[in-house]
Amino acid sequence: MLEKDEPGAKLQPWDWRYYSEKLRVEKYNLDDAVIRPYFALDNVLAGAFNTANKLYGIEFEETDTLPTYDKEARCFLVKENGQVFGVLYMDFFPRASKRSGAWMTEFRGQRINQKGENVIPIISVVCNFTKPDGAKPSLLNFDESETLFHEFGHALHGLLSKCHYPSLAGTNVPRDFVELPSQIMENWCRNPQVMKTYAKHYQTGEAIPDELIAKIAAAQTYGQGFINTELLAASLLDMDYHSITEKQAIDANKFEQEHLDKIGLIPEIISRYKSPYFQHIFTTGYDAGYYSYTWTAILDHDAFAAFVESGDLYNPELAKKFRHILESGNTVEPMKMYVEFRGKNPSVQPLLKDRGLL
Image (cartoon, rainbow, N blue to C red; front, top):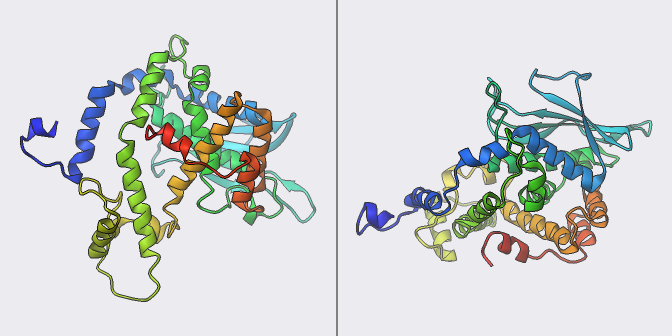
């Protein structure tokens, strides 16, 4: 494509995403306008709730009896065996003063109080999806659908907590483990068997066709070589910065280039972030921890593979073991819990296979 536009030109790092997207559109012909009608917000939410119900036997009952901080926020009582053990707020749409993005937060974490009583968690999932338009509901693209499942996974981590101290409860776990409960939910979101249960055309009720599921799956493996390389380059650069043991003056650009040369990165692919704006490792708590995104991807794919290998995506024995991870917070060493769940150390093979690299 570059040769067609500029004969003889050499592909530069800044060209990559532009031409990669043009090629993706040409190769997969995957139009958001075709996808969105199958991913109405309420259907995707029902899919997430149904997945949690089948795994953990919990239910979500919408209520208007509790106060909300905004008229568009929705409130759900989270129940097990008829008993409320948590409250979940869902805040889906943009509004003035609301920051962009998606996240899970808590108004109150689970804990045991001084009287020995369990204090139930009050959790919130916040997103910025397109608002309904008249009779048309909020329609998500597939990335947004995965985002909802992802943040809902964080919410489950907070809701299912069974810890004594709030500082150890729920999502208060090491940075390289906190994304496991969220990212594993994305696997159910994109699984064809599960997708058929919730991805239904908002007008006809028709389940998403197999050919569209196949297109979505194929498109997800596209460009993964580039994406994984830039992520690993950023992770290794982070480690190099935080391996410095003595105070010294550093030319960030020079330091970065020497690092990239050392690992043999090809000129067409650079680190995901240039050092002057690599905020993760200097201002947001990911110092020496940017690798956790990739490491957690290994964990979540390997964990979901256990369900696939069992022949039951909602295998009750595995669900019980994984629930123990969600309940335990930071009271047990994370890898010890994972090995108890999986029966072995995590393997990178499921991740490589899912991303089309194996």
